[in-house]
Amino acid sequence: DTAVSQTPKYLVTQMGNDKSIKCEQNLGHDTMYWYKQDSKKFLKIMFSYNNKELIINETVPNRFSPKSPDKAHLNLHINSLELGDSAVYFCASSQPSTANYGYTFGSGTRLTVV
Amino acid sequence: QQQVKQSPQSLIVQKGGISIINCAYENTAFDYFPWYQQFPGKGPALLIAIRPDVSEKKEGRFTISFNKSAKQFSLHIMDSQPGDSATYFCAASMAQAGTALIFGKGTTLSVSS
Image (cartoon, rainbow over all chains, first blue to last red; front, side, top):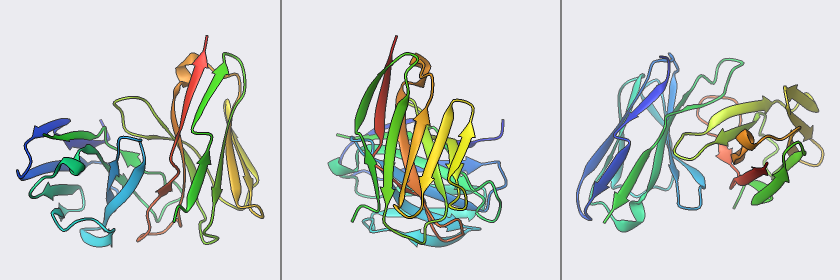
């Protein structure tokens, strides 16, 4: 199936731990994103990569580090997890150069820090 | 600064009724305005989108109305069904690499049967 897939779907971890979320898209898109959805469902852009190059880096703590080994993958590593990092993290991809600019989102990773 | 303002926060509509969700934006450089639908436990899914060169776009029961001078756009769901119960997000961006969708805060729609 063509899609944006992210793993794991659920992640429960203790404060201070380091964790990673992986994302892969097989849509052939050049641009990938990480969004954070808080408990009030607000979606906020964190990072954007275009063809492996970091394009957008919003005011996110530097404990968050994205990595794009190739244009089909965008991973998110989080160091020293804090309670406030608990949220749903969505990966998405798009192809800005085409008429169909719509983002395709993954199904999300629910991170709970205890 | 919230660049895309969405209202109402929640909406209850009877089956068969019309659901209307409104959004306003601030950045006149935005040229792409999509609506996303999100069900619990799922990622947002693109519902319908419009560019500022048209004032209305219709796809099935879903219509976007766009008012460039007022910097407003709205989603109309005709003949609302219980299966439409979800959270709806408006968004805006410049349709080019290096920019990202800015989302409204979402509207939770409940369609009662």
